[in-house]
Length: 55
Image 1 (cartoon, one colour):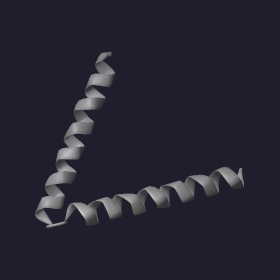
Image 2 (cartoon, helix red, strand yellow; image 1 turned 90 degrees about the vertical axis):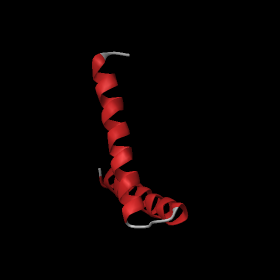
Image 3 (cartoon, helix red, strand yellow; image 1 turned 135 degrees about the vertical axis):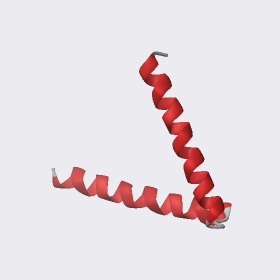
Image 4 (cartoon, one colour; image 1 turned 45 degrees about the vertical axis):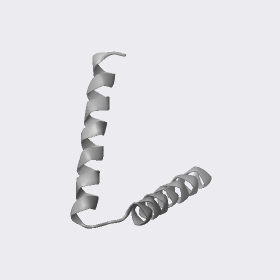
């Protein structure tokens, strides 16, 4: 593991802490949070597939 991967891992951990604290501040339950994450993943997957089909 080189220094760039370590920095990337530390920043990813920091982003996850920020997202977790935002969910806690907004009183979002785990079920609703996972549902929203799945919805966003689906949206991105549809956009990526659409771009791939258009090419």
